Length: 470
Ligand code: ATP
Ligand code: MG
Ligand code: MG
Ligand code: MG
Image (cartoon, rainbow, N blue to C red; front, side, top):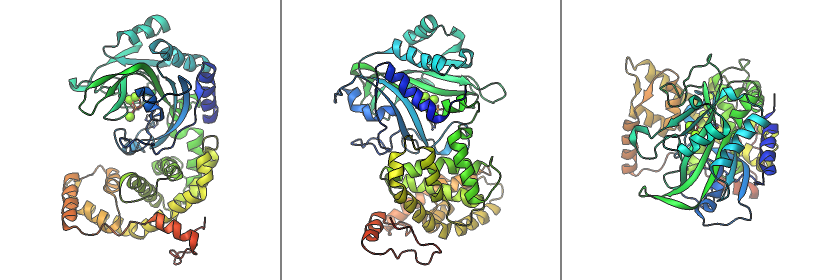
């Protein structure tokens, strides 16, 4: 049964609404009042204090489609983009939550009910995992739901480290956490990858679609596990992953939203090879970058803003690789707003700002990008058998050409070459010690945007097209 991404999102929220859950809007990508978190990385973030018992809501069941970014901090998938079928920097997480209301039985039954009854997924394609010692969850799956025991995998702690398991979910180093049970979909033996728990589990054959967390503890900074006032449930299912299944494709990048973005990107940069990985990376990156700006993050040289800047620069580099000759990235934002209109109110409202910020950032960077790439080519040509770009070169690219280290790594990884991260750090330390001014690539957006309201913008007169006025 084919379903569009928007139809799946709506069906999910409706299913849980009909089971007594309050439908709650997605929160911002910038977590409010939570300095422990870089970006919103899961549906439960906005309910953290409710789980901890510090905040009370008028409801004890909720459901959301939460926009998430995983490009830094504990959950970081930036390096996976372009390399796996299932990871994005930005994705939507569908979730249902119980705040001290239902627990393991209902959580498992709801998840199974949605997948097998509403979406009608074939049961023999599904596989589940439980935390190694969680007999209760194992028994619910086997005896109450009827999943054969050989399709239930127990996953223990990695190398014996307590609670360091794929089946023990934690938001960050501290905060609510607990054992979980996860549901995987088998895309078929024509795709490389093994069952969870096997050495080939990182392949893309068995794709994890849904994580059902039994929230029981609040992890303290010293590692102790404090029991939560009331055991709760937090679940997260990747919308793009379930969409791939419902649309009969393997990769998330083949679903409706991504195909539209990829087509548009190809048109803008002037390529016809729709299967090019760089198009996928660009389609991924426009989602995180546009939504981050819409949620108030501005490119900068530190913190959240630097993560944003790094993602934008990576996208720009991929555009150049595809042959883009003009500033292109910002032109995708409008298509994104169309594709995600159901959940993109903030993006639609902020579209002119988003386009402007992305455009200025690209204009700044393209001035040095080509020269930096030439330098890198030179270095690569003389590397000989060495498979690592020296730290000084990585630093020079950073300091003189505005290449974040991960961008250099992204370029050379395509040729199976790495970067000397330690050497780079040493150079950075040296620079700090010299107490020189920071690199001159920073743009003070607040200043610029403020000025632009007051006086005609004159900063980019030399460019062919004038920067759009808000
Ligand atoms: P994976 O093992 O595939 O990296 P995960 O275990 O890190 O996923 P969870 O933290 O359990 O993911 O998040 C809940 C769900 O969110 C996952 O089951 C998946 O469907 C989805 N998800 C997680 N990370 C991403 C991502 N980077 N892009 C798209 N969907 C994701
Ligand atoms: Mg992950
Ligand atoms: Mg996982
Ligand atoms: Mg998981």
